Image 1: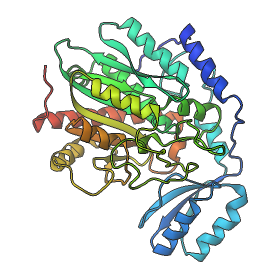
Image 2: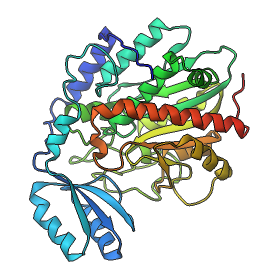
Image 3: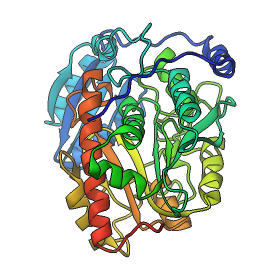
Image 4: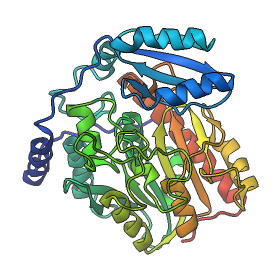
Amino acid sequence: MTIRMMMTTMTPMNRLYAFLLLASISASEKVRYDGHKLYKVHVDNHDSLNALMNMQEDEDYNFWDLPRMNDSSLIVIAPKKIDEFEKIVNSNKMSATLMMDDLQRYIDEENPNVDGRATFDWTAYYRLNVIYQWMESLAQEHSKIVKIVNGGVSTLGTPIKGLKLRFNPNQNTSIFLESGIHAREWISVATTTYVANELLFNEDPAVRTLAESYIWYIFPIFNPDGYEYSHTTNRLWRKNLKRYTLRCKGVDLNRNWESHWAEIGTNSNPCAETYPGPEAFSEIESKSMSRFLKSIPEKLTAYLAFHSYSQLLLIPFGHSNERIDNYDDLMEIGKFSVKALSKRYDAAAGGSMDWVRAAIGPRITYTYELRDKGRYGFLLPANQIIPTGEETMDSLIGMFQKALDLGYGSQP
């Protein structure tokens, strides 16, 4: 494992982005979760499932997972709803386990002492401007290999910046990594920046082979407005910041793609966390990124989306149980890529992975659900960043070694 220490300073342009973004959200009062409790609730009968489905419409219940039969959901419960929740649990004979007794305490402990740090070292979760400055520093100091690419802009006009790594000028096969489409999934952002750093600086032969066999497009923060908002205003914010009603704002950008849009795993209520927008590609973030993906000049061999949590590896298609044409290959590749991760299907329509596979056609398409399995959920402590990055690199090495064995080769 190699970690490069980088001094970070703000450029005038980054100061402007930070000022405009902070000005746009400064009127929002910081959301606190004092006294909120996190429960893990297991569903094993239809009465329990229906009860949880009804609870989803109440904003005082924040579901971190969609309720499913014979599965568990993490639910954040406001203090005023605790008694009601306990009655629902008892009347429906649910199994409920208290995971966090005061959510705000865990939020405060998740990312200690990040302010004032002068180095980018994967021991903390960093703000948008710090990450963008780190990316720009890489491009300035390693200009023959690293370029800044622009995937578009956000609702508030923030650029969606990515890295393009090209070690071999004759290489013509590319891999695309994206993370941070859901604002609160900080570990996904930290992991893709960790991967970029390893691809650049780790001298291990297996890493060098992986890095130099492809062109890499890496977009750590797909949803920059939401990501910054999750730092400044509401740690559990998921969506972008587009407002469609006076009371509610935000669209789930991973439900907004034109791939079986709004068919499953979404909610038409604009206040809901899985609101897919009024139509497919209604959001400038998803629309502009789809255009960027189509504009990539090289052959796109793999598309990897990074999320949290669950420690799963998901393959297309998210909208149904239909098997993709190279399902067996993807499962075999997945077995080699997964070390601490597991794999299964998840049901949600309108996601980036499904659209990319259908519209552009990379043969290797996965969604990583990173650490953990539910102990901390979205509030994974910063001391878990490096272990998550290390196991992800192991996974990527295994993935593309097996892909080569099965004939999914790079093309110099």
